[in-house]
Image 1 (cartoon, rainbow, N blue to C red):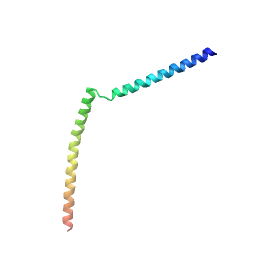
Image 2: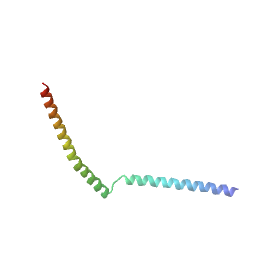
Image 3: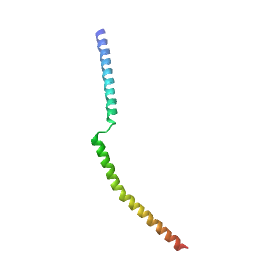
Image 4: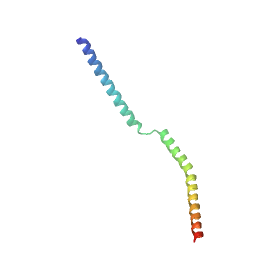
Length: 81
């Protein structure tokens, strides 16, 4: 009976130690993972450039639409007078 208790305690200690070391490795990986590699930096830069290239014409179109609406509103106001 004492042998069985000893083995159980040892198994629990080894299991706890294994979990503790695994959790420490995950923290170290996440800290080193926060620094981006050269490929990831290039990918992020390319993605930002593409987003800007897509958004620029859309923003210009919205601006032109707003200007047209302003002109129409001004014309409507002048016609009402």
